Image (cartoon, rainbow, N blue to C red; front, side, top):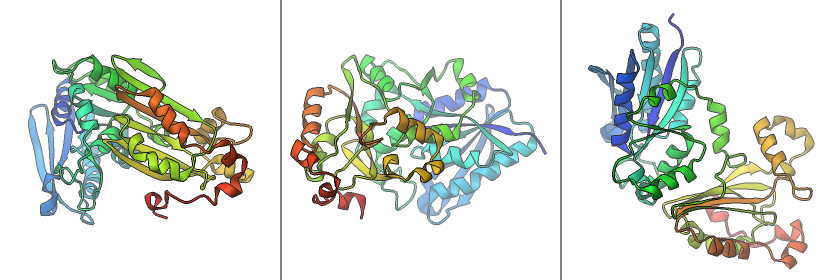
Amino acid sequence: MAGTLPVAIVGGLHSDARAAAVAKLLTAVDGSVALRHDLSTAVQGTVRRSVRDATGVLSQGEAPLVNDCACCALREDLVPELERLADGGLTRLAIVELWDSVEPKAMAEVVAAHGDRLRVTSVITAVDPSLLLPYLANGDDLMDAGLAAAPTDRRTVADTWARQLEYAPVLALADGADADEEDRALLAQLHPTARQVAVDGDELAAAALAGFDVEAAAAAQHPACALLPQEADECGVGTYVWHRRRPFHPERLYAALEDLTCAAARSRGRFWLADRPDTLLSWDAAGGALCVESAGPWLASLPDAAWEMVPPVRRAAAALDWHPEHGDCCQHLVFTSPGLDREGLSELLDSCLLTDAEYAAGPEAWKRLPPAFDSLLEV
């Protein structure tokens, strides 16, 4: 049996930039092969697969849908194809070019689960900086845009693009004349820890083989320990970090959701509702739409014996933000956008917190406040 096959995953909704990145890798890395699954035929019940190298197409095929899900079909077909390349022993790098709306996290974890044969060496999102804000502001459903991966796909262009962008440690930039300094500042503030390389530059090949930690990447996206952006202000683009130690009044926050969601091109973080004092809630907004979900308990609400079951990275994140009275319970929301109104955001958010009298009533009284978020959290 041949050795472990290096796999680089290249994705992103900016299809021209993505295609350019894959083409560059095929020419820059000798012995590289690109696999692409076209999900546009999913409505006919199949997914089309192509395998190519720098000289052209090597093979083509189709995979049937699995449970009416194109992404499921991709997962079922991808690993056997990669293992076939690994068995051949001739491929130096397998490049997985993801279809437009496929998110890299799920695919990276599928490939990494076969670590005895396959090794994820990079996840790269290709970006045209001039399209960054238009895609981040696009609240259209993927279904309406012809980009849905399944009949039940309810994602939007904006939230899909935000996750594609923020998960990848490497951004391949197709930086043309249409991009300006505001675009570049927005990109830097949305994902400040990313390594930026030019799509047509020499660094791309090295970045594709640099190595990738699937567990660390997942932890960096988890709302309890995400590496959220810091305060910034450059070229008309701002990032505002709002951090407080008092819970939200559920009704006042709910009433402010529309204004808060539309106040920035992108906002995310974790927050604390008074009527759910033990639950860590995630905030994820882009394109004028907000997703609120439960991310499990705050560590402060767990008995000491349960801490051993919590991942070390989660315990470390909580320790850095620990409060003597409330533990890790807090508000930590980050807003990034051109033309950001910091003062207006701060005033609106602060007005949604419990008043002094409400706060003094204590957790048992908080739990009796009207449960305004039940519909969002599907309780």
